[in-house]
Image 1: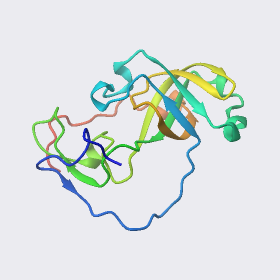
Image 2: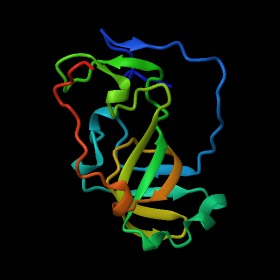
Image 3: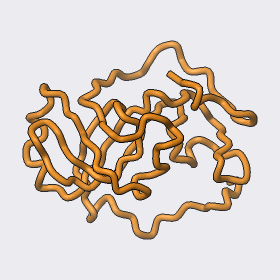
Image 4: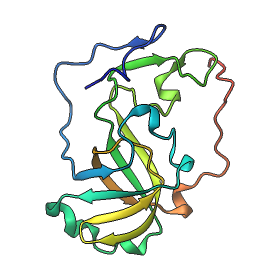
Amino acid sequence: MADGAFGVRPGEIAADLPATFDAGLHFIGRLRTPWHERAACPKNGLQTQETCTVEVDPAYAPALSHVTGCTHLILLYWMDRATRGLLVQRPRHADGPRGTFSLRSPARPNPIALSVVELLGRDGDRLSVRGLDCLDGTPLLDIKPYYASTDSRPDAQVDRAGAAR
């Protein structure tokens, strides 16, 4: 659901989303952060040193077994307040429109986001982490261990000029 801080800006293109869904999801918890408004939220997890909390619903707490053996985790979450269906966006940092799939913006057909976070500790069904970039109360979809040996791609590049391809 979009609020006044979200929506389609001039020059952006949105899709008509299907009336039904292809898959079902279960939120496994909520993310607790200090940010309650989009403007206050960091653009990425490297822009903050804030400690945030991953609240895992008690039914899913057994899945946290051995999680403290990880230094970093991948969190997948649902950007529930983002605009759905944007295909072309006008990012404020860019010199023109960009295709949604070339951006990390939460405004997309399926507003799934991810962050690689540092795991600071566990207390029951709560994890303390650093490196989140979402609004307080964002629904959590999944937690995965981050493996530098397989997840890191040091040679990856993004063409910041945004040349059409």
